[in-house]
Amino acid sequence: MIDDTIEEIREMQTHSSSVVAVKATRALTELLDRDHATVEEYERDLERNVGALKRANPSHASLYNAMEGVLTRVTGEASTVDEAKELTESAVERVVEDIENGKSRAAANAAKTFKDGETFLTHDYSSTVLEAVEIAAADGNHMTTYVTEARPRYLGRKTARTLSGIDRIEPHLIVDGAAGIFLEECDRVVVGMDCIVEDTLYNRVGTFPIVATAAQLDIPVTVVGSGAKIVDDGFIFENEIRSTAEVSLEPVEDVLIENPAYDATPTELVDEVITDEGVRTF
Image (cartoon, rainbow, N blue to C red; front, side, top):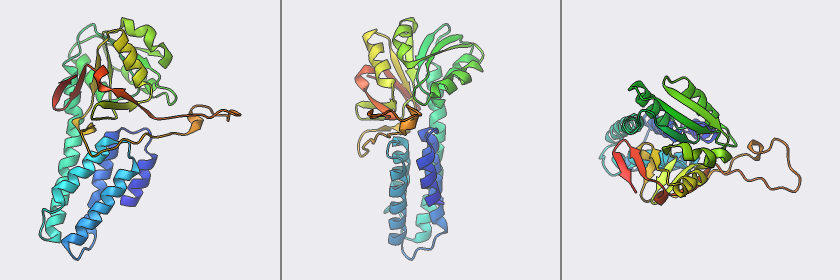
C-alpha cells in the first residue's frame, strides 16, 4: 500500500497538495498490520516510510508537515509495539482531520472578506479559493472575477468553468499575459498557495509576475490556504520540472524548453494570508 501510494503521489499532477498529504498519511496505517519485535524496530520502519513518502513529492509542504505530524506524535512516546501502533492510528486520524478541516476553515475565513460588487483576479485552480467564493456568493454577494488560463497546463480554464456554475459570479477567462491589462479593473488579487516557506510564497508558475504587477499598480493581494502549507523551518522546497510536451507538442530544433511548475513570490508583495488560523498581514 505504501509503495503503491508513493508511485501514485508521483503521478498525481493535477491534485491539490492537501489531497496528496491525506493520501500519504492514510497509507501509514499499513504499518499497523506488520509484525515488529520491538518499539525501536517499529519506529525505524515508521521513519523509513515517512521519509519515502516525503520524497515522493518534495514540493508539497503540507505533505512534509503531515508526515512530521505523525512522526512527532509517535516517536519516543511508546513503551510497547502495541502502544506505538495505537499512537500511530490516533495520529493519522488527527492529522487527516486537521488537513481536511483546515481547508474548509480557511475558505470560511476568506469568504468573510469578499464584498458585494467586488471584482478580483485569480490564477490557477485553488479548491480553497473556490470554496470561499461559493460561500461568499451564497451569502448574497455578486462578484466579477478575471481568471487566467494558468499556462501551460490551463488549469485556470477549469477554475472558470467551476465559477460559471456559481450563482452571482461573473467569470472572465483571460490569457496569462493579459493580467496586467485587467488588474486595473480589479479590487484585489486572490490566489491559493502550494506553500509558504519563511518569506517566500511558492505557487503555480505565473503567480509571481501577477503579484509583482499588482504591487506596481497598488492592487492588494490575498493568499488563501490551509495553515498546514506554511513552514517556518526544516523544509526545503524543490521545484517540479514538468514535461516539455506541455509547452510544445512538437520538438523545436535547437531550442531548450523549460517548464517549471512553480515560481517564488516574496511575501513582502502579499498583503494578507488567510488560513484556518485567521488572517496574517505583511
